[in-house]
Length: 253
Image (cartoon, rainbow, N blue to C red; front, side, top):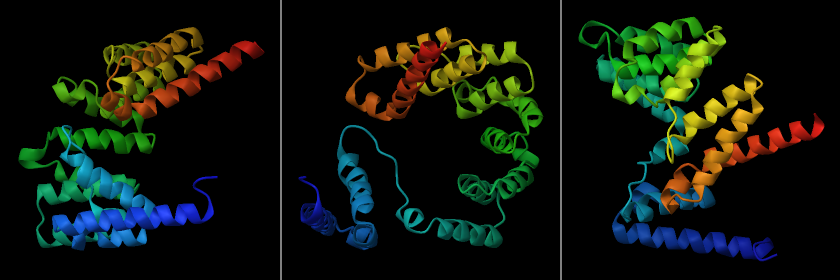
């Protein structure tokens, strides 16, 4: 095979050399050298995505290289910053890092501690608390939080809204849960919420309705531009898997 054995080795070395030279010419080698050398494939992919594709017409995420190499180091740095300056911003940055690292209890403690004074109704913190509470199955605590930020435009098709709908489902309010899922629908967009609505219908035993949602998503995929397809690729892959599952269920019925 083309990429087996020695071929793969030489391709990896060539990719590292290309990235190193490109980074040197841009004056960013000190920032990237460890990632390129010690994580050759992943590091080069991250470098190409951040430093080359970022110059295209569309924006790319700002990747924290130190966090990729040492995720624990990011948390220690934020903990030190909070000890030095106990501010709302530092609390939230550290809580976000805890949540990302699955230190849910620590994240909840910090989020809760930050909701004081002028920041007592902060929408970002409340949305993040919804995520944290869902991870712990604390569905009853999600519902009042979601109602506080429900009317904000950014809540409409956010992850917090999806988890609010799931919390309603898990507390037995199936009708309202479906209403929330339906509120997040839209053509040629919002593929994540639509996929979650399909899963909800599957859990309710409504496979044919779920199939219609998944197949609509896959049909719309063909009409999207390259960047939109790439951005939502995960949802299309998942939708295909669910369509296949539904087909298998019908065959065994």
